[in-house]
Length: 86
Image 1 (spheres, rainbow, N blue to C red):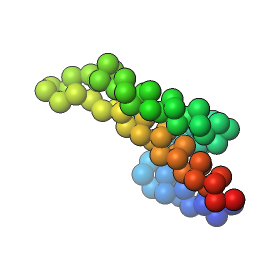
Image 2: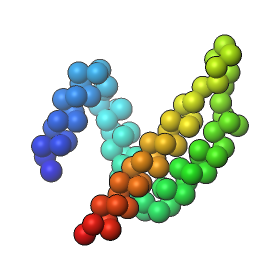
Image 3: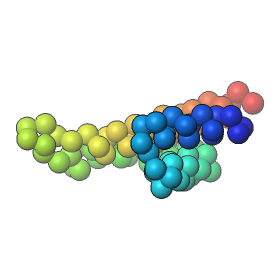
């Protein structure tokens, strides 16, 4: 378990992510793993509501909210699949 965490930290440092960013991502993963079905549903709702939160960026709407939703959904799906493999 230490290896992936160390690898993630090294890659994040190369990209320039600070410890607070890594801590926020760890919190997100923890919440998804705590209740992956709830996280999946929440991600789906976020995705459906993405247009409501899209900020116009000079003719191109921002997809930040949608990207966050897809991250939550992907993490939830991975957690659910991992659970069904066991």
